[in-house]
Image (cartoon, rainbow, N blue to C red):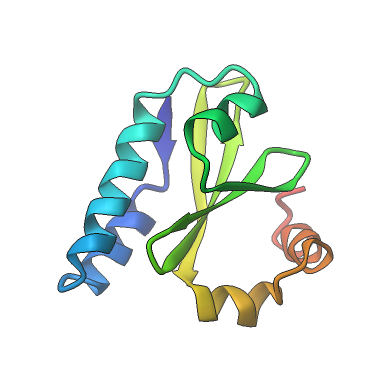
Length: 112
């Protein structure tokens, strides 16, 4: 699967250079996505138990170490796009931990 907007993950890694657990978790996420052959949404959850589907259009949060990374998976083109990265505190501040707020954010960003 092709991973788009990977620079957001690289920026997150560079920002957290001393956090080796996080760096390894990000590298594993990148590797899992790039080597994935997910043909349906259930394949994601089967392969990444830390994936949390937050919208039926294929938006998932991946809880990696102490951070969350939001991934938009576009199955038709065999692509995954990173659309948001941040710490759990940033996640709570931005999305308030509920799907209605996440959906509103996605609409504002014109992603749905």
